[in-house]
Length: 253
Length: 371
Ligand SMILES: Nc1ncnc2c1ncn2[C@@H]1O[C@H](COP(=O)(O)OP(=O)(O)O)[C@@H](O)[C@H]1O
Ligand SMILES: [Mg+2]
Figure 1 (cartoon, each protein chain N blue to C red):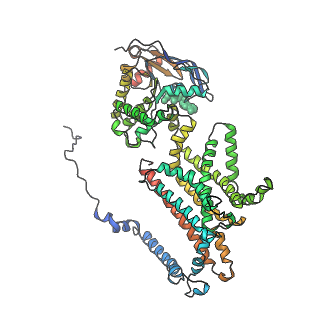
Figure 2 (figure 1 turned 90 degrees about the vertical axis):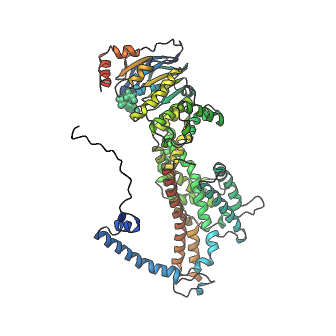
Figure 3 (figure 1 turned 135 degrees about the vertical axis):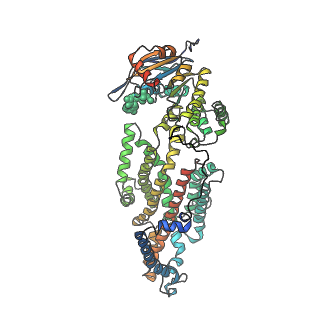
C-alpha cells in the first residue's frame, strides 16, 4: 500500500543542520528535515535516540544550539515574539497527556483560545465543544481530567491542541502510556486528523499506524537521522543495518 | 481436557464483613484492647486523664466565680474569671474609645461575613466577593478603624489594642505577605541571575533573623534612616517589619508548592502558547496554591502567635493588655486566670484555622473541583 499523494510545495517545518547539546552530551547531530504542508511523518528509533528532543525543538520546548529551524515561515530564534507565533501554530500532544487537572475538560480546551487568541469566552467554548465532539468525548466536557480514562484524556489533549487551530501537530508517543485496549480509540482520532490534511509529526512505535498514515518514516539513532523513506520501502526494504536490527526487534515480538 | 483447566461458571456474591470486626465494640476490641500491652496503656492513659482533668474542670468551672465588680467577688476558691469579665471590653478593644467600638465590630463582622461566604462552597458570586475582600474591604476597614473621612473621627493607632490589634497585625501581615511571597518564590526559581540572587539573598537574610530583632529594628532603626520630619506611625513600622519578615517565609512555602507541579504542566502550557505570566497565573499557581494551603496556614498560625512580640515595642496586643491589667494593684495575684484567658483565645483562633485547613485539604484531595 502506498500513501503517495499530491502534496503542496509549501514547506511547513524545516530543520537545517540542527545540533543540540545537553551540557557536554551531543544529543542531536546535524538533523535535516523538511516537512511539507499536509505531510505526515512518523519518527521511530530506539529509546534515547533523540526523537522527543527533535520534535520538542520545533516548538522550542528545547533550545537548539546550532542550525536553523523555520516553522510556518517564522524563523525560530531567541525572539520571544517568534517563539510565541510558532507555538500558536504548532500543537503538541504528550505521552502523559499533561491535561490541566484543576480545570474541566471544557476549560482545558477553551483556555488557550481565550487567553492566547483572545477569543470571547462563549465562542471559545463553542470551538472547544466542536473539537470535543470530533474526538467523540463531548459528553465528558464538564468532568475533570482525573475522572477520565487514559484514552479519553489523550483524546481531550488532542482536542485541546486542535482548538488553537494549529497548522502542524506534534505527537510524542501519544499511545505509549495507554492500556492496550485504549490505543485504538486514540489512533482512530489521529487517522481521521491525517485524512483531513493536517501536517503531522508523530513519534510512535505503532507500525500499523505508520503504514496506513505516514507519507514518510524516519528512523533515528544516536541523535542522527539514519534512514528515511516511504513506509512501504522503509518496512519491506530497509537499507541500513541499524534500521534492520531495530525493525526486527519491534516487529518480531 | 487437561487437569490444569479450571473454569468458574457462577460468580461469588458480595458478603458483609464478619460480625465482631465492625461497630463500636469491634473498633474498641481492635484498637484499645487488642493485646495486654495495649490494654494496660489504655487504662493508664485513662487514669492520667482522670487525675489531670478532674481538678482542672473543678478549678475552671465548678468552683469558679464569673461575675462581679472587684476581686471581692471571688470567694469560692476556684478560678476568678471576674478579672477577665470586668476587663473584657479592654481585652478586645484596647484603649479604643468605648463609644466607637462599633466601628471595630463592624469591620470584623464585614470581614467574617466575606470569609464565611468564600468558605461555604455552595454560595455564588465567589469572584465578586474575592475582589471585595482583596481590594474594597481594606479601604473600608482602614476608614472604619482609623477614621479620618466620611465623618468618622480619627482614632490614633496608639489607642488600638487587645485582640482586635492582634487580629489587625495577623491579617494584614499574612495578606500582604502572600503576594510578596509569590513574587519572591517566582524570582528564586527564575533563570535571570540578578533577580534570582536578589530573591535568594532577601529570603535567606530575613529567614535568618528572629522576628523580635526585626521589630526592634523597625521601631528603633527605621526612624534613623528616614528624614526627621517624616514621622512613621509605630504600628505601621511594626507592620512593615512583619510583612517583610513574613514574605520570606511565605516565599519558601510557595516555592515548595511550585516544586510539586510536574514539568509536563509547564510544557503543556508553553506548547499552547501561554506566556510566562499566563502560564503561572492560570496553570501553575492555582494548582500550587492548593498544595500550599497547609504551609500557608502553618505560617499564619506561627505569625498569629508571634504577633504577641509587638509588646516589646510598646504596642498593646492581647497578651500585652492582659499583662498590663495584671499589674493593676487591685488585681495582683490573678495571673493564672489572665494567662489562661490569653492562651485560650490564641488556641481558639489557631485551632479553628488548623481545622479549616484540614477541611480544605480533604476537599481538594477528594473532590476534583476547585469551585
Ligand atoms: N534534560 C535533559 N538533560 C540531559 N539529558 C537529557 C535530557 N533530556 C533528554 N536527555 C538525553 O537525551 C537523549 C535523547 O532523549 P530523547 O530525545 O528523550 O530520546 P527519545 O525520545 O528518542 O527516547 C537521551 O539519552 C536522554 O537521556
Ligand atoms: Mg521520547
